[in-house]
Length: 78
Image (cartoon, rainbow, N blue to C red; front, side, top):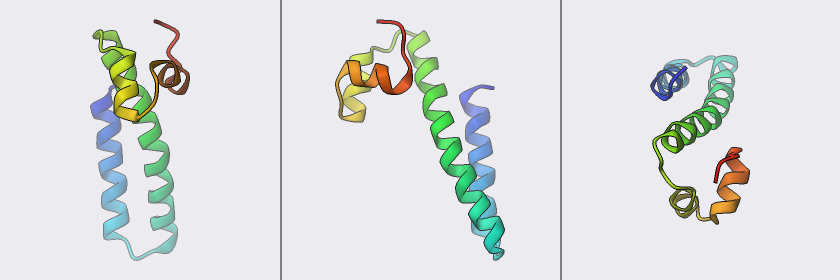
């Protein structure tokens, strides 16, 4: 599954959240959003790393060191 597919899933969860008055549906949508954002972050990071985007810039974006970014997103490459 690519990043765009993950994003489409998140979009559907946002629509569920905005359109539903049912508390269970709202809670499920928020849960799905939280999990989906985490998955999307990891997917996007993996994709940009394959394209050569440096860990140092990822760290700058997240306000941490290159090493911290690698640890957070499971980067085994250097």
